[in-house]
Image 1 (cartoon, rainbow, N blue to C red):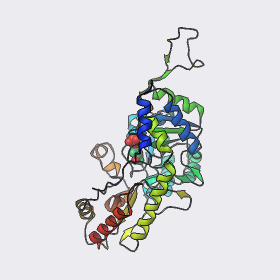
Image 2 (image 1 turned 135 degrees about the vertical axis):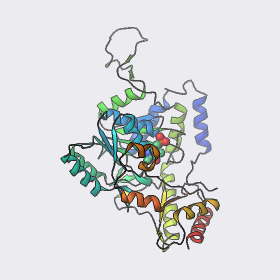
Image 3 (image 1 turned 60 degrees about the vertical axis):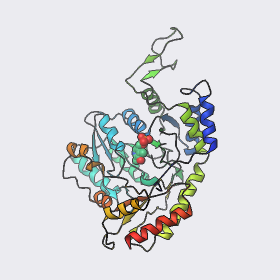
Image 4 (image 1 turned 90 degrees about the vertical axis):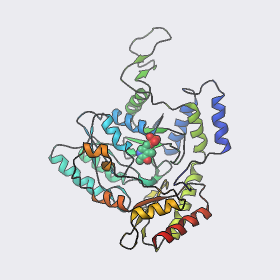
Length: 385
Ligand SMILES: *Cc1c(COP(=O)(O)O)cnc(C)c1O
């Protein structure tokens, strides 16, 4: 099977993990802050907090920005369920903004329309969470403008997008948002096994995130309420979690980060080849807008079903049978049984539903060979023509 994505681990990665395993601290040592500093520098962010997954990062970012009971978070229905789950974990409600079919990202017009009517009904969201689908940034400048007009906070779900750029800035700089979250799951751009990172620009948010990551505990001398007690002293100030990353994971992240440029270059090269090989077929290929450099975490094709004699389901299963582990990113979140029970039934998310009926993620990862790519293209042609 050719996977749709996979990690690339080399001998230097392995060596760096082993070094930490042999050292005194395999967690809460020096590698986590080193990794945080390196990512922070790369993306030009003010603060970086490593966590044990992007899901954990999204969760504590929501809490740090004050999301709670009776609040609303708006996100895209075409995302991994985590984007929406974290709102519910905070006791808040979730609502979905339909996608723009040319980018598969949250549609700005729909967002604006929904904001206008929510303002009338006094039901504005506290947080909007754009998702940078496949590694292409949402239109953050426009979303930021709307946030000033309607008074919401912004968390970018940049799980796909470390190393990507928007308007000449790295995604993660927080130029147009309150917080940005990366994922280091093995299918993503760089990996720590499981892992994630939150970037933010305000010290108060950074301090809150640090507390939430570690049980709500602080050892910071300036923050302790009791002074001059024994050296054992630490204090819990809020209710938090254990969302820490280990040091051997951070070591893997540091080692992977050295190759991020080559990973993204390789992914873009593969994407450009697909663009060339698959043009003039009854397919809609991904587009990247002028403002953006995509990481190409995913390469998503959409079937023109009017011109293809097979169904979406058939094309998908034939490609799987031919040894290509195609995938579908994502089943619209509101289609999951859990969400069906929770949400109103008449959601008007036409573009997301259309997307779901046409989309297929085909393999893309740095080590995908030209030969494999030609086989994939050939199999697609034989299936749809
Ligand atoms: C992978 C992913 C997540 C969750 O990341 P984890 O690190 O696995 O928790 C969240 N949102 C999106 C869009 C993702 O692709």
